[in-house]
Length: 278
Image (tube, rainbow, N blue to C red; front, side):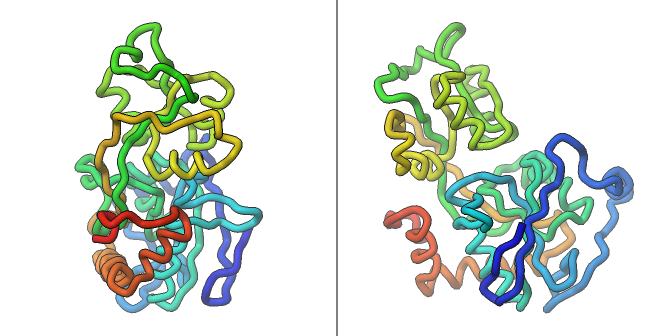
């Protein structure tokens, strides 16, 4: 699959198997802590020459998802800006979310950066280097309209809760003692709610709000009363590419100043609230 990028090149989408491990070199790299071969562009190490290779986990609208043959979204646009600053094109690799949050994708040189609507937390920061936060988010609940969702409704025999495996939504539900059912991605999680496999979802606020703009989800609502506070960051291999982290931070700071961030935000999520501009 491919799409055209802003520089006029072609961006390829590569899918790594969700059911199997990363390439056969993975075990050797993990044991040897090998530094990936590649090229250096303006002080930034790239694993695949003249491309900035991005690992993500599809679909996760409005941050990254497929629209026709194109991979689009808020994160895709921001990484395109970083690639443009380097004078290269972006290549997107679709892989398991847990392979991203564990740092495995970097250990096997699958990508330079991970952009997956990923919350910064201490556990993940122990295995990857995060950029400065680029998006404020938080967990919310989504349920069928009229569903009685109360604090006491989640115990044994109560509401069935759906989450995406490996996410902070899953962690939140477990802390609350909800015994959630985990799904591979956001689409299968949403389908579980639509088909009655679960009664309520724990998911990031902007994702739920995006879903609710679709008439197909008119029977569902965002449940009031829960919204945690989390911040997303882009991830880079731990300790191996500080120049790329600096570049990402510089681009995030610049686009917040010059209005590009606001325009990109509003393209994918509608009017930007005042507290999202900082």
